[in-house]
Image 1: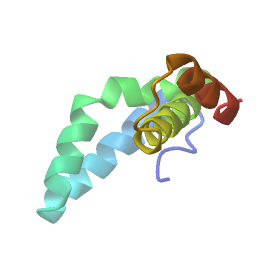
Image 2: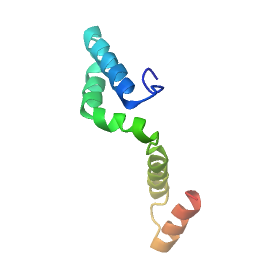
Image 3: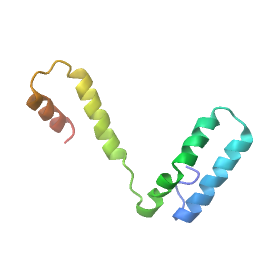
Image 4: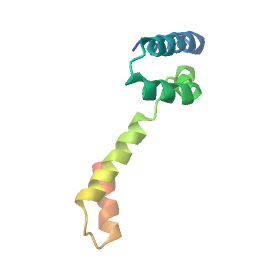
Length: 90
């Protein structure tokens, strides 16, 4: 939440870079993977500040479909499977 409330992309970039630098200085081993991910995806993360949209809804639908697929093991009819997905995700 340290930078998500930033007014624009430039402020968010500065806040994110400050956080990454503080995390590096902390030398906490658990932050290594987080720092790497933030550095690799920095531009994609900062695109949020141009539109204020995320792909959270899409990820939620994908998760629901995976769960339906897991619990529907054994469906022989694809149409039934498709209808269940449409019913659950509508």
